[in-house]
Amino acid sequence: MKRTTAKPEPHSPPRVGETLAALRQARSLSLDELSRQAGVSKSMLSQIERNQANPTVAVVWRLANALNVPLSEFLGGPQGQAEPAIATVPAHATPTLGSPDGLCELRILGPIELAGQFEWYTLTVQGGGMLASQPHEPGSREHLSVLDGTLEVEAGTSRTRLKKGETARYAADQPHTIRNPLKGPAVAMLVVLHPA
Image 1: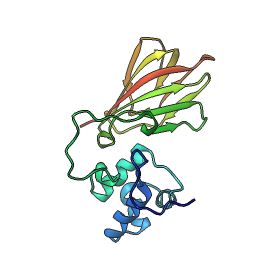
Image 2: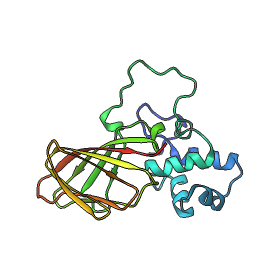
Image 3: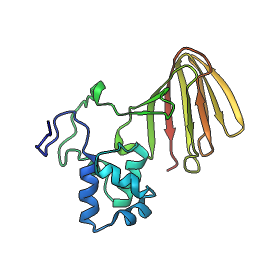
């Protein structure tokens, strides 16, 4: 059954596709123009607008910058309302990202408006799983703290193995990989710091 109301239900995901299309059209930008300005492929933009793809935090941040809007407006957050004393995010409303091999899951714990500045995640890596990342912008650093299990971190030409309770801090402006060399799952806290 198709939903006909334009107002999202409480705790429903933001309507990124509708917002993107409205913002792009209000600025009279073609998909080609926005693709060039944001550094996001035209096909990805088209899929997002048609709700056929869920963009990552990094893609949403690039789009918001290209369209010159705050992330909260881009994602249809409440406008002009006071922040509650304690804001609670239900578990089912916490955004997650998966790795291409399906063995890694990142739960995005940080607020969307801090994306591109300071991000934190819980990372679960199944046995044999690997999260490989391309270099972030110059000066970026990651801090990986293992909460359970064992993880290996490779940054550039350096590699280290972490056990429960240990933390690795490394430059993320080079190719870097987090892998689980064992059979059981590993859980970690991942913090990404981008240069000011």
